[in-house]
Length: 390
Image (cartoon, one colour):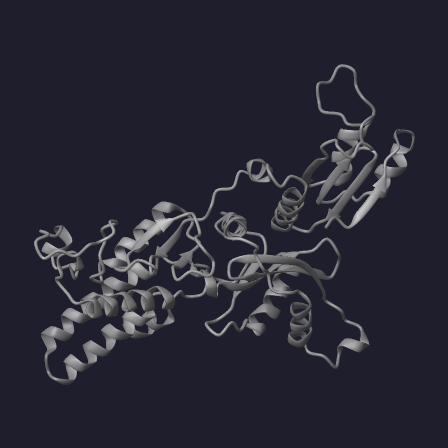
């Protein structure tokens, strides 16, 4: 996991310090005692950090000094904070399997959960994943619980799926709730609809979440066009108003918000090596990597396109496979922390519904990351809505 290893001896400290790079890295300090707890951290300057931890002791200082306790130095140079954070997570998870989560202080990503395992499905906000092979669907990651709740509530206003959280036992004598009174729910609680009608409405909600709102926009557009063709212009105008109201609801979605089992992407980060970038792969919300992609200019690369070379590196990087729902939540927490940062270093390119990555955009993104430029403007979340309102 950590690629470099040096033996530390206090009498050779100057030689050892000069052998490590003055660059970002994740490192581990280990003593001779196999039972002793190692020291694991990340740093923006490995040489300076080791000089502080392993240099000669100043009797007047209270700073931590491990000079007499460390025998081995293990480290991996990194090119970005996201890469450092992900490698640090993997090292801590392996080294401290019982306490790593407390050390990293995870803030799990809020998700919209569609409870399809319930007899009468509903939606809710959660930061906990259930069974990865279950029927329930999850959408995210959102930047905050408030953002997730606003998107879900604004979206459900266009449907008649229930908002209550109870397990229903339909009874015609049940009085219902405010949503059924306002005709905003099909009211399965008192058999206000058949099970087939409720299931059809749930399918519309799922299609809406799956497509980022595009399915409902196209449905409204088709209804509007049909009303216009039948000369029902007042109905067409009313439907157009609903279509316009849909746009701000869908515009809340960031590009990264997807159905988790379809969340596939390539993250490009700066690399510690010259003329290179670092790839990290995302599959169903889980991250794998890193892998180095070198921008070669040699004669042997002229017969091979950049797209094919990128694909070769991706093929050599196996898809991420999280062992549990908890591990996926941890990966999503790391991804959310990086993606929603005010000034994000590196770029992310999401796969389409068929799992195909945008290779031409990726090639251009590699050049931008290599030159230290900012990312391209975020893609429109739902192209269909923009087209239909234009």
